[in-house]
Length: 341
Ligand code: PLP
Ligand code: COI
Picture 1 (cartoon, rainbow, N blue to C red):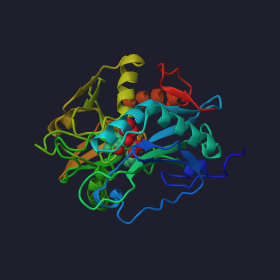
Picture 2: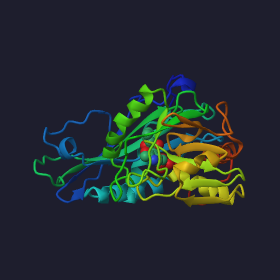
Picture 3: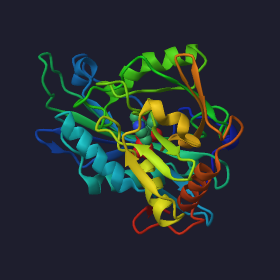
């Protein structure tokens, strides 16, 4: 086995077709045994439920090469559970947790040469997804589904790596109250595309979506949750029923409280108060912890004291500890690291 000859430091967040992917089909009320395949293409009937009524959900997690050369995944059980929850919310058959964990292991092992080396700044992004594969024409759930896992090596999600980004307050809503914002349904991302491109056209890196009922509270970006740090060095994260329960955010809250002695509070955060915070960032599997230097609310600039050059000190500590755990430099809480090799 030899590592692929990629420029690991500069691969960006892009799709590279790797050697193997996992596929399992749901038919006649059950999942088949599943298999690895070399074929990256999916051939479906023109009337498959995914195409018309967007019955699809997905996950995102990463495999890491640790300091001692092992290959591990980070809290894949949490992704398995969240995907089961997403599936239920879309009337799809949940893919069983133990099978999910085993399938992730199989995909990573089969693509070992694609797992970026320790210290390269890149990781192997793993994308489990599930969609309605049988024809439906009336609006109803399909009868057949396909669960797949692909993987691709990735670098930092935001161009510029650790440089603070600029975010604009969006006029669009990402998710409705009592809607699908709290599950990882592809349709939420379709909703965010126009808003995302509008933000880019106006020179912003990302959107800050507000709560759609009152447009008063901070929700999240199209692909990451927000983190704020008070002037006293405490972590504050927005609480809302319509944001995705980020595994990274929940892990950072644990790390803050149990590793760093930093108080962490999850509560509704008003847009009107964010100028009081010392640091701001976004977090997620893809984003890890990315600093936000500035939020622009319809021309009004909210600049965080941490500035536009580097991550603020508290977020930096959180980032260092979390990535230290993921890369095997810091001892992980029980059950967080799944060793694959
Ligand atoms: N919010 C959204 C909308 C996301 O797509 C993601 C990415 O998965 C996150 C938050 C972060 O979640 P996690 O930390 O589980 O990757
Ligand atoms: C992830 O962080 O895994 C996501 O799914 C976010 C996406 C924008 C890449």
